[in-house]
Image 1: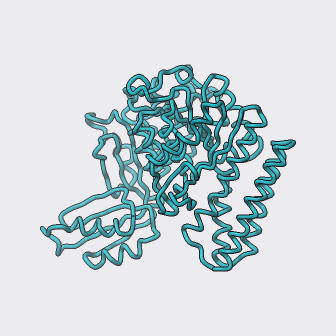
Image 2 (image 1 turned 135 degrees about the horizontal axis):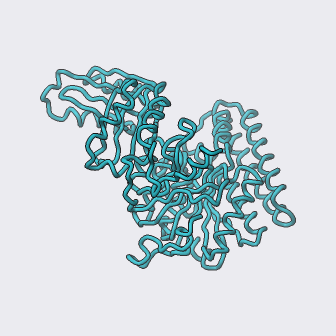
Image 3 (image 1 turned 90 degrees about the horizontal axis):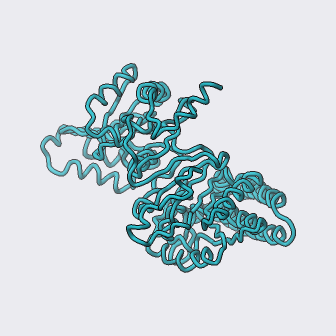
Length: 491
């Protein structure tokens, strides 16, 4: 971790007097708690924060792949396959018990073993009930999926306790208050802040290390909900915002936000510093490091967010702040979002008619379908969507007012950078670099920090490599980790 992070004056501290500079919210993803070795690595990182005088509040995901397996168990039960569902749950039970046995001993192991068995007994009963009814509702799905975080957070808290870090488990469902939109519940931030102040802050002040499961919450009535896939990041931001933390750390398995996907461009660079606005664009348009909603609570309270690597804790990572330094390069990052569909809506009879756009977008609103990009003319509208669940119903309604055509297997390339504002010739460089690729739609965001266009999925890798070569050959060392590229070149 950089010296700047160790001793910096937190954003907002001198402005509002409300930020708690020593309190740090640390979120660890599934790969950071995937097994006993990873959990011990996580414990060492948290210990390091405590030894520096910081007061950590820890948010953890389920162990890697557990949520997927819980979903598979729920789906099997919904089909009436009780034995298949229970077999998946049994394997998960054994995995958690084996991990606990590696990590814990004495009374702590006895206590956690009993807690794990109690949780899985309840899960087995729930799966039997789903299989008996033969129906899997969103509400029941949320309850099944919650078990991963509920168990992992108990285990991590016990590991902290065994290593003299005063670990204390807090059921996140008692703090993260949401509405009842099961599968993707909306957080009730005022209620969350009140609960955190009541239940978590006293533990921090007493020297404990609270551990909460990410991704899960509950309604005011106490019904279990989830925040959507990737919601553990969002939990961390909600906790950080609610407690007015000095920093929020997102610990994952990469060194931070990269200029693009290293699997496509091996010479991708770590971005040292990026603005909230840039990070929000990247998260929404395909960057996998952050959940799209993650940084909103941090933005509202000007709390810096760090993206760090639990497998390489000494790396400085990426710092996300309200104001990023100027950059000599026009773009900070290139993101790609695949599996998109273009919907063309054409209605010549609507020429010069009033309310046509509203009627079209009302259909998407009715089915809660998010649109990524829009292109319009007098009688036609082209939109891109990443959800195919309700497309048949959407197209059926749109067909009542226009001719509708779908084009699948599309991808969106999004180039983000605050320094494209006011620069001439950028578009020319972009499209010259990918002149061999067919571009379907083009958009430059109203924020003036994002240039996006649609291409075929099969062209993504080639387009990204060409753009990266064009714009990151001579990167600004104040913003990008150029030293890593030098080391790699010498290796």
